[in-house]
Image 1 (cartoon, rainbow over the protein chains, first blue to last red):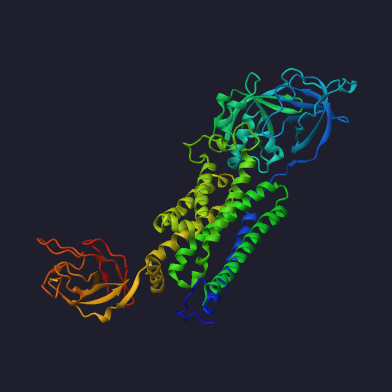
Image 2 (cartoon, each protein chain N blue to C red):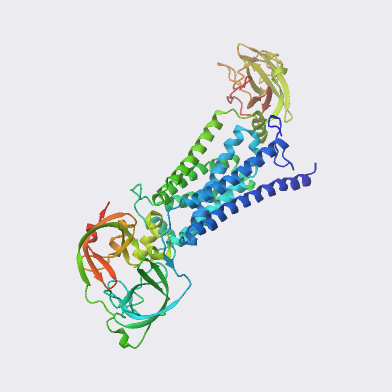
Length: 259
Length: 345
Ligand code: FES
C-alpha cells in the first residue's frame, strides 16, 4: 500500500481506520511488541547473577538442640558424625517470623535442650532457622547434649582489617535474593533494627563470601549502631573470634569506616 | 448515522486497542518473569515480579510519552493517541503492583509502620548515591494515581480542560521522579552498563521526540480539530474579504465584522457604539475601522476608539488555517486586545 496519500484523516469513532493509516499503525504496533519482548530479554540477561541461597518457605522441619542465647540466639545441634577439627555440633542462627530476631522467643532458655519447628535458610556454610511461633518446647536434657555449648567469648584468632558490607543475615542468607546493596537497604535497616543479627559479608580474592557476626569491642550487640552504614562499603578493624561455628568480629561501631 | 451506531463502532476500535495492549503487557511480563526464572533459578519470585512490573511500567511510560509528539509530527499516528488513557491506567496498575510488592517485601512484618518505614528507614537525605529512592517512587505513584483516577471525561469536564491538562502535565514530573528512583535505586546495585544505556536511550528518545515535535508546525487538520474542540466556527475564506475592508458574518446568531488589513485578520462586533451602524460595511482608514454612517473609529486589535474617545466594542478570538477564518463565538469584553490572525500562516 502507498504511504503518499496525505489526505487520510483518522477519526476514533469510525469503525475502520483508513487503509494507509491502519497499515502504518499495524507496523508500529508489531514493532512495539517486538521491542517489548526484546527489552524483556535484554533485561533478563543483564541482571547481575543471583548467588545460590535458599529459604525453605512453607517447609517446616523439627530440630532438637541446645539454645545459646548470647550474643545472638543460636541452636547447637549435635553433628551425626566426626567433624574433624570443627566443634562436634552445628550452630544455627535462630530468628523469628518477619523482620525480628529471636531474642524474645528464646528468653530464659540459655543452655536448655529444646525441640522446635522452623524453616531453613542457608547460603554457603551459614545456616539459619526461622522459628515457627510458639513451637519451642523444653525437653529433658539427654546425654547427647554433652558438649553442646560455647564457652565464654570463643577463641581469639587475631586482629584483622576487613572491607565488606553490613547485611541483615536473614535476608542475605536466603529470604530475599538479592538480599543486599541499595535496593535492599531499607529492608536490612528494618531487619537489623528488629533484632536480626548483623553480619559483615566480606568477599575474598576468589569471590567467596566470608561471614563475620558483628559485636561491639566488649561483646554486646551493635544492631542499633550500624543502621546508618548498612548496604555500603565499610572497613572495620577488630578482633576476630571463632565462636562455635561462627566467626565473630568485635570492634567499636564508632570506628567503622565508610569507604 | 445514529448515535447508537457510532457507539458500537467506537467500541470496536477500543476493544482492539485494549486487546493489543493486554497482549503486549502479558508478553513482556511472561518473558521477564518466566524466562527470568529459568535464566536465574536462584532469584526469588518476588524480586522477579517487582522488577518485571516496575520495568514494564517504565517501558509503557516511554510509549505513552512518545505518542503525543509522534502525532504532532505525523497525524497518521493518531490512532495510538485515541485510547492513550487506557495505556495510562494500565501503566499505573503495573506501577502500583510494583509498589505494593516492594512495600510488602521490604517494609511489612517489621517494627515500624510500612508507610513510615518507606520514609524513615533510610534517612540519608543529604547523600546522593545513598539518597532514599523509595519515597521518589512513591511520589511518582501518587501522581500516576491522580492522573489515572481523573482520566475519565467526567473529570475533564468537571475540572475544566485547562486544569485537567495542567494536572496531566505532571506526568513529566512523574517521569523525572521515576528516572531518579531507578538511578538512585536498582542501578546502584545492578552494574551492567547496558541497563544505564537503555535508560539513557529512553530519555534521549523522549527528549528528542518532544524537541522535533515542538519545532514542527502542527498539521492543519490537527489545528482544525483543536479549534473545533475549543468551539471555534469557520466563518469565511480570507479571499472573500478585500484588503482594508470588512465582511459581515453570522456567528451564533449574532452579526460580527471580519476585517482584513496588513495581512492580518481581526474580528469585532458589527454594532457601532454611536447609533448601531454596521461596522462591517465600513473600511479601515489610517489603521482604524471606520463606521460608514458617521465615521466613529475603532482599533481592529482591541475594539477601542483612539484617545481621547472612550467607545469600546466586543472583540473576538480569531485563527486562520489554510486560508479559512475561524472565530470563537464567545465575545470578549469590549476593548479586550486580541492577537490578529496572520493570513500567511
Ligand atoms: S453609527 Fe457608527 S458612527 Fe454613527
